[in-house]
Length: 89
Image (tube, rainbow, N blue to C red; front, side):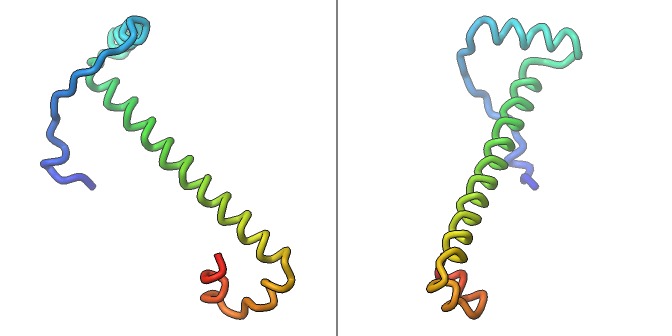
């Protein structure tokens, strides 16, 4: 959850290509929103997607490391506890 101070809006200047502004304006008219709301939701969506992608990338790396450890009988035999496994990766 965000604090009240974090929810306050701060003005930020940015330049967008004309075609994006036109698309945003079409969207504002169609859905009776304003540019700020559309841009905020777009940035939030982008950041959430990046966090999800980072999680899956990290998970993929962990799975590959696990597979490498389990494929090596010498390493797998030394792993008796979860702590041993976590130390190995």
